Amino acid sequence: MLRKRKREEAHMAEKKKQAVPTSLAAQAEDEIEALIRAALTPDVSLGAKLKFAHEGAGVIFIDGTKTPNEVHRRDEPADCTVHIDPVLNLAIFQQRADRNEAFRQGRIRIVGDVHVVGLLRPIMLRQSNATEDGFRE
Image (cartoon, rainbow, N blue to C red; front, side):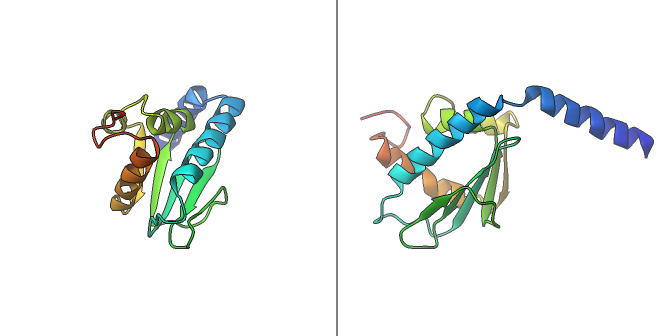
């Protein structure tokens, strides 16, 4: 029992070392929220609740069950929760990082209905005038 507790404490200490500085995380969250708001126009419906949980920062919640979609920072239950570093999340939205590679590296953890995350991708690509492979037209 004591060994398990020490391992957990060591793991938590390591996570704290890797944490993004607060101002950088907050700035990334602001940009992510703006990108999502711009992409989720009134004619687009996500049809589910999606939450991006940013470790050590906060959350960005998309309530796609409402018309129009609602984007806010309140922590509420969601159909799908994506646990991700806010700076990495922004890089993925800006197409500067590959989401599949980040997932394989264990930098993204998805809890709940994975299909909900997939619904957001075409919406974000349309917003950025990119093709399905992620490159701009």
